[in-house]
Image (cartoon, rainbow, N blue to C red; front, top):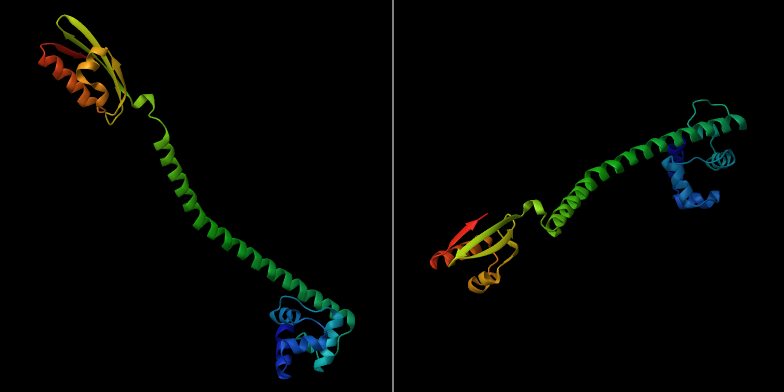
Length: 202
C-alpha cells in the first residue's frame, strides 16, 4: 500500500519526514498523513514522489503490475484509495461516537439520578407539612362548673403546628413554652385533674 511504501522508501534514503517535505514542497504534516494512511496525494504529486524515489508509480502504489500505468489508470487507483480511506474514517467515527455515547450513559445517568434524588429530598424537606399529615384534637376541660376548650394541631412527630383556645388555660398551664403535643396534653390534663376538674379529648 502507498502509505507503507512511502515510509519504507523514505527510511531507505535516511530521510526524516521534515526533509522529505522540503524536497516535495509540502508541510511535514502532509507526509505524516500520507504515511498514516489518512490521505493520499493527487496524481501529479504521486508522479513527483515516484520520480524522486526513482520508482514506478505502480510500485509506489503497491501494485504487482510491472509496466507503467498511464495517467488515467493512476487517477482511478488514487480514487479507489481515497474511497477506502473515507470508508475507514467513517467506520472510525462511528466507533468513536458509540464509545462516547457509552461513556455518557455510564457516567452521566447515575449523576443525573443522584442529583434528581437529592433535589427530591431537598424539596421534601423544604415543603411544609401537608394537611394530611396533621392531627387535630379538641380538649374540653371543666373546672368548678366552667368549661374551657383548647385546640392542638400536630404532625407525625407530635410537633405542635398550631394551638390555641381559652386564655385561662394558657395562663395557668403556660402552653406557649411547650412544643410537643403529648407533653402539652398531659400538662393540661394534670392541671385540671389535680384541681378536681375533668378533661375530655375529641
